[in-house]
Image (spheres, rainbow, N blue to C red):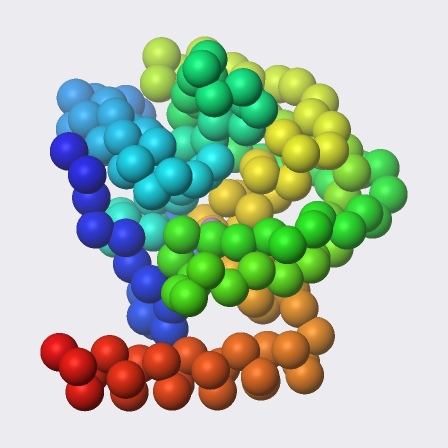
Length: 173
Ligand code: NI
């Protein structure tokens, strides 16, 4: 089932999400639906708060080949930021309207620990694009969007565009 995606400036996106304590059928179904929603968008990651569920779970697929899907579910992800600061070019987000993209500084390497849907421990190092995707999605669990990581000037400009865009949506609805 494709879920509705919560869009900025909805204040719910600022929620700090709570840890998942155990996996049940409902959580598995949510993960399935989040993956379906992510692929349909299409996107490379989706966090639970983006579909109105304020728990620490994200789904990602940072495989570059479109014909081979590599869906992953990360529960309670914890990151140790390593490596150097790199520019994540033209980052976007399914919750940020108008297809807005901007360069964001991210770490080139992370040490990720998380649980999967069988509650197995995930403990690995990720680099470059996979590391960037997981940083972006984990940010969502702390109520942080990529537009919170751009310059104040760019953000002000973007916010004024969003306001105009929202007025237009209202007038045409
Ligand atoms: Ni996002």
